[in-house]
Length: 475
Image (cartoon, rainbow, N blue to C red; front, top):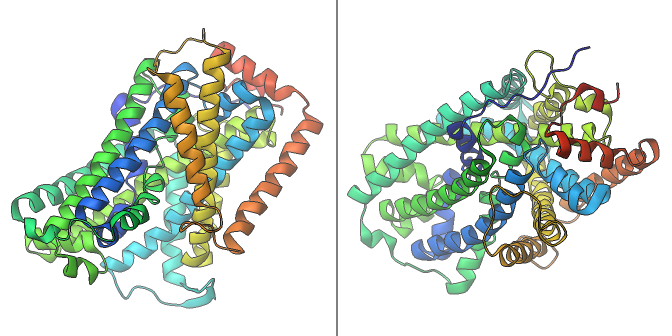
């Protein structure tokens, strides 16, 4: 069977939409009101500003490495060059859990959001799992959505990019409507109190900020499909993070101007109610919910791209079974890796919302572990290979790298027992532990069956600038 090849076709707007769209998913619609209640208007905005600085530091390490090594798999390549197969496996396997968890959760978020538009559409109770009732029509919406998203991704990166660009533009238009409407029609008095619960309130919001910015890391995963100067890849990655920081702060400002503290506390969906208030009609709130559905689609689409490329990269390096490294001969996409991630999202709605929350929390830990590994790779390569070509060179790199590493490790500790964001025992720890055991099995298999081959493959990728050559994948 002939193999396809990755094609560099994504332009700057498509790359920016891929990353920014991934970061602004559905969370801003659901959670912004709660942020204001927890920390106050100014407290919540400051928390996001501080969290944004942390993510920008991590993003800068990604930007330098993505421009220096624009290969599919991103983290997989950087960590392999810095730490070898073991470090690469840990890093990439961890972030794959994060990507899969987001894709699966979006398949549950879609039917949940549809309830805001059609409150009585759920019929046919099938079972209750993890405290969540699973209805036939509810699950069907998520499963059909998963099939459609998977098929769009198989059709090619341009199909995914077109969807991302159009829907991200819709979200931006609606978001700007909300922000400008609140600035003109909101009341400054509604922002009182500016702070709630002092430092404790800000911390409650701050611990959530890293998870709202997850998604910029999709750019390195698809680096081999980006048709831009390498330096530009790094710049767009950083710009996408800055845009996301500004977006969340502006949304918080809009909600706090549009709704009083009492109105926000009694609202089921504060952002939609804020939109309704500033424009004086329920149509505006429904439009905002549609933008939220758009956020689900952009996040879903981006993480399906990222997850499939990470799986492909590991398979191509003989660290996962070779069939996951197959390229579609016509569409030039890692078809089997896409099908694997897509299949998991198709069955996800059958488990209900409760179980998927466990999966997302466990996946969040995986993503932050990967962030720490990338920051560490950045530092190692700065010291060991100072002569490496770095089209996007981060000034004061060692300070940035250590800052990113310390912050990433600090976030990891937020998942540990005793923290407000600790993983739930035993369910979420069982997911994280089970994924680690499966990964260990694949790692031992790869070392036994393909000893030393990953190093050879990655070195060839770095030498040629390609990770999609047919003779590099065992049939």
